[in-house]
Length: 62
Image (tube, rainbow, N blue to C red; front, side):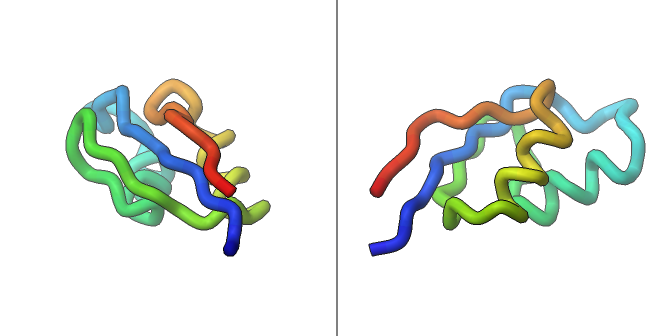
C-alpha cells in the first residue's frame, strides 16, 4: 500500500497570490477546514511546503 498524508486547509486563499490559490486547487482544497488524503510523493510534499501557512498535515499513513 502506498504511503498517504492527510492535508487540511487551515488558511483562507483570500488576498493571497494567484500561485498560492492554484496550489490549493491542485491539492484538491478550496474551502476552510476541508481535508484530503493524498499520495505521499515529492511533488505533493513540495506543494504543501510552498503554502505552510494555508495547509497543515494532519496525519501520515502507511
